[in-house]
Amino acid sequence: MVNVLSGITVIDITQNVAGPFCSQLLGDLGATVIKIERPVHGDDTRHWHPPLWGEESSTFLALNRNKKSVCVDLNDPKGQQIIHELCKKADIFIHSLKPGSEESRNLDYETLKEINPSLIYASISAFGDKGKMKHKPGYDPLIQAYSGIMSLTGHEGEDPVRVGVSIVDMATGMWCLIGILSALHERNKTGKGSKVSSSLLETGIAWVTLQMSTYLASGKLPRKWGTGMSTTVPYQAFKTKGGQWAIIAAGNNRLFKNLCTALQMPELVEDPRFETNADRVRHRDELRKLIEERTVRYELDELVDLMEKHSVPCCPINTLDRVLNDEQVNALEIIKKIEGFRVKDFRIIDLPFRINDERGQLQSLPPLLGEHTEEVLASLNMTEDELEQLKSASVVG
Image 1 (cartoon, helix red, strand yellow):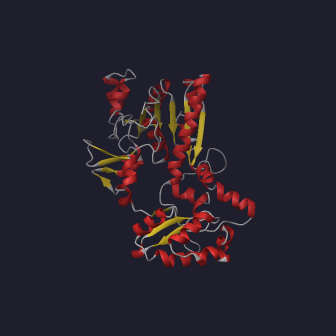
Image 2 (spheres, helix red, strand yellow):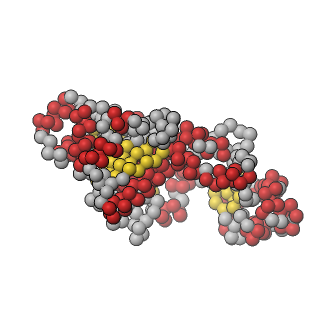
Image 3 (tube, one colour):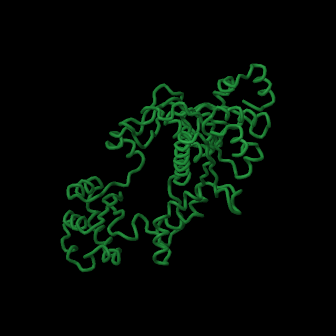
């Protein structure tokens, strides 16, 4: 991919998942990302293990390619001055500090705007930068609970279930990226920087858009539907021989007829209980039972092939080992093995889009803690003696 953000410099003082995912995306698009970490400890995710990949946290490795690691103590005024100097020449500044704590560190929007009026200033928080909860910390499962996502996930009558991926964290990184790119576009027209705010809670609320609309329309709280949907049937997982599962999505009358033909159940098409989608929704439990009595006769791959032959949308519920070796996934070349890295058999999940049929460019692999401190500080015309004094005072590392 042409490095669309080549020449753009990012100062990134985020940690954990949402912010680092955002800055990694910027790096994948060609930006130079300077990741500021605490001396000695670094990003919290460096300590999120097991599992280790080689001798490093797999979580950190997944979220921090295309970055330079610089250790600076943001609680020390001298460390704050270093960030100010870096921001003078930067294009984007991203932080995930709790609202208010950026001001105590002289890293608030007004301070950095005065230093560099063209700076794009982006913040990621848990509950947002307004309201009585703005100072509260938050993580993905808390926001899945608070936003209502967890009330919609799992099976009716069972314990609460978290969505199995960090959907709120990573999506917040994406929303922040969209805001940053929008602000960059505006800067190209006006020359002025902007303040971009994003939060895990706003992401969680955005993800319940459809269910909230359903509630507003009906006045009834949505149920948990497991693998299914409230509005379409059959549109869920069905068991196959050996206990494996496949998703079948027959979302209209034509597809339902195709499904019945494939399973040799033509009588269901004429059954008044299943004549329309609305009928099928009302009688979902009876229909599911009848269909599954047939699907359990087939091996998983056999059922998927049968559905494909009859043009019925269907796919297996894959485990990650199947995903890794899947022919279609590998055809897209989104999972890439990296040779010569310090971690054996290292692989990355590349950008999930292409421009002119090319993905992002791997400029550098995840850095060691403080790997680029001297290199970056040297760009500020700092002498060796000054650097040693800062090191001895534990301001940098």
